[in-house]
Amino acid sequence: MPDRCPECGTRLHQPEREVNVYCENAACPAQVKGRIEHFAHRGAMDIEGLGEAIVDQLVRMQLVSTVADLYELKRHRATLVALDRWGEKSTDNLLAAIAASTRQPFHRVLYALGVRHVGAEVARVIAERFQSTDALMAASADELQSVPSIGPQIAESVTSFFADRHNRDIVRRLTRSGLTMAAEHRKGRLAGKTFVLTGTLIAFTRDGARQCIEERGGTVAAGVSKRVDYVIVGVDAGSKLEKARTLGIPTLTEEQFLAMIR
Image 1 (cartoon, rainbow, N blue to C red):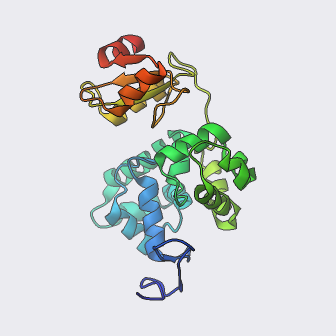
Image 2 (cartoon, rainbow, N blue to C red):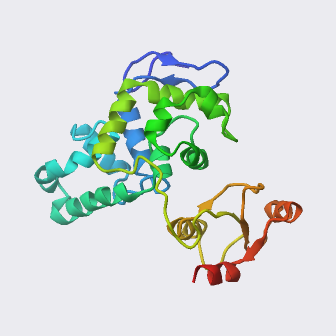
């Protein structure tokens, strides 16, 4: 096992009680590229066209070094257009996709930031409870642990991330770029309702059903609890359906759900 990062030479760190070792150099080129790729991923900011090869090129040319730099790429349009295999159409498509990502909801932005141990579902739970990055920056580890499904490891990771000056600066720059850094209280037919999806859906992909619910003001939970209003049941539904029946939570077939949103 090496004791230094093979990419930048920084001494590696192994957190207590963890198997993995980490390079903690925020400027490490491999980390910079990895953070930007994660940020642009479909489950995060969903920036179409910003794949591994493009990210590598942008970092090598020093056009981006943080995710906040993506929203300033429009200043370098002429440079991008002149690149081999880019041209005006490819450049404008990428810039348009970056601009469109500013409409992603708060929980996706939080997931895209790449806080260690904060996956998509955990980001959704945290966003629902704390509502904004300002509230998260002020939150203590104890306050975070008061949220169901947030344990000491996640709480420590979140507080450490937002205590870091470099990360706080990125959050401020993203805010200035117009990203959604607070939960929106949407009004819609499903406002205030929480759904759980189980089984295989026919009319929707799982992501499509989630988007459909969120666009109408509802939320999607990962598991069944007393806080859930409806469980949407697809083909080959499993233990979530049984738990819903045990708790007396209403279930909807896919056809019933489609009738509800029409």
